[in-house]
Structures are given as structure tokens and as C-alpha cells.
Length: 99
Image (cartoon, rainbow, N blue to C red; front, side):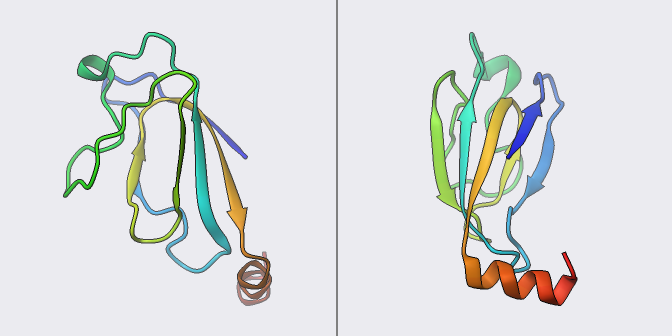
């Protein structure tokens, strides 16, 4: 799990894909902890490049999506992230990258 603490106002985790190299992560789950979040001030998950959907990181919201290249995203909030791993892909990645 990962705990993120980005208060907005231009701060955050850069646009990325959680599993660009086959490390075993299949599904990303982000649980938002943002009380009184104002998307006009603090932003959402989609700044910059092409956007499929704008998701506001509202309090008590759970966002679930594929961890691969289909879902680039940014972190701009207070949240807890966990991943579901594919056991075979994870084992192969550990062997390949000596994780």
C-alpha cells in the first residue's frame, strides 16, 4: 500500500502508469481521504494530455482501474493506494529484476 499526501495547489505525483513494465500489478485501487476538496482549487486526476475521464478525488470515494498503459493518471490528493497483483507476472518480474 502507499499513502499519498498532496494538498493540491500545483503539488502532486506526476502523470504515470502504475505498471508500465509488467511488474505484476493488475488493478489499482485508490481510496480518497479528501474532506472539503474543491476541484477548482486543488484539481483532479487529469492535468495535461488527453483525458478519458475527469475523476474528482472526493472523500470516501474508491476508484478502481487497470494498472497498465490504458490508464495514465496523476496524484493530487490525500489517498491510500493498493494494488491487486497477478502472481505469475509478479514472480516473473521478481526473477527478471531481482526484486
